[in-house]
Length: 365
Image (cartoon, rainbow, N blue to C red; front, side, top):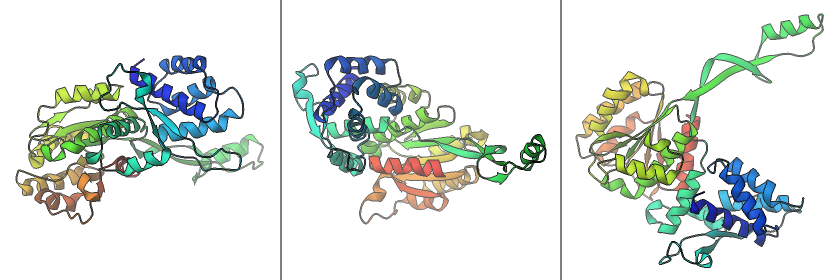
């Protein structure tokens, strides 16, 4: 098992012990062994692995739930009369100047759930290395960055449209006795999501986090999610982002993208995307997300033409600009002025909370 996963689980065990749960070394090892056979990126798998190995008494269950929420999600469950006060999260964190193989006591720092909540709203461009690593970990826990569309087919439901055929058949089977009405509703199917991430120099403080968000999207719906990087050229990185481990996926993506921190020719790259992929079906009926600050070095009118073309093909067009959340921001750059008339949702993308909101926009598009 990777060393960082073991350190994370060990820190969780310390948090449990601080809350009064008897997480002795044998139970900690049992949890590590259990997680090694499961999907470490699935919060449900990690939750049940820890609950079944760490909790020895019914009184441990509310403490465990509270610690798990604070440690892995940053959320604090509402306090009831039977719940203990808020827990203190004891999390392993690399300290500046500490060697990778240093003493374990040097790798421990204290963080509360409220501090994690503050971290969620901070601009990632202003984070320290340790804070950015924590944001990366929380991004890896995103498990639903996908979109759905209504199918023409129906399925049985408890509510919805009256299903006359099933209702009549039920009455006939009971000799004319009406036992209840039957309902149906449209099924849903995955909708394609396409993410185009600007990796130019002006986007360098945000490109890494946005690509990690794209990795979470690919992990949520690998068959219906496509990711491209855009700068001075267009690069398709979907295959590289299908790697299960986020850090390994990012190393592969970094090797695949030749134009990190270069210029921006969004109009030309969007035209290439539509000519090679979008017009052939990838953008048809899809939710297309463009993550960029809109600094266009090429002709803004070309970007406007291609955005109009994209709007005719896509189901929804979403633009995520990290600078949108800044006080007094106005979209005055040539690229943004040309693109905005064809954008359905204009959102921020500067923080973990903003990216969680972006995931909601994609899911509700």
